Length: 231
Image 1: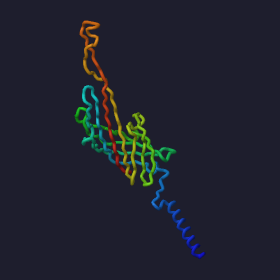
Image 2: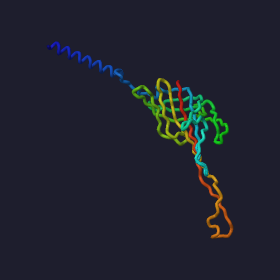
Image 3: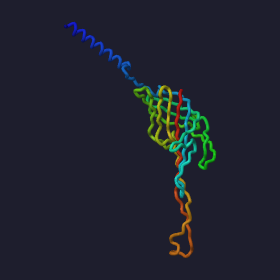
Image 4: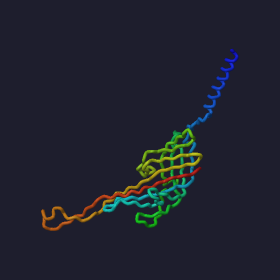
């Protein structure tokens, strides 16, 4: 009886030891996430940018209207056009969870202007050392091995980097980087509406008098970017 109990105890102990070792090694479905994700993903990713642009105006005296400047409108959606480009990921000294990110476009994009005439756009024109759009992103790896790139802070200062409306987000899965962000340009204009008769006419003077009336209209152009590429 003692031998049976002793044998059972040894078997139980060996199973416990095996389980503990497996968990330490990342077995049994567990995954050891990287403590240096920024270093893991650093490099230059070459691929394709998909770019679209939609112009909306509330021009005075005219119903609000929209025109797709780059891409093709399909119902409520806009399908962008592609151009070659790259994303450069650099490490930040002293931080294993952040990266300096630069986005670069290499080709012109054909579209139309606000009047519907042919127009060539350079939405991501630049190079690594001068005009490339830059920002910082936080990087972390999830239990499925995917690296996540996140910067949810919208940046409205063009000189500081990406002028985006909803931050930057992306993933690196199986070596493929996907990245998305938008840029928005707003232009407010003072516009002439019409001449109106002075309300004091006939009360304060006997001379017909007209005055010009002005108002403000707003134009908003939203550029949407999606990238897919590999090192």
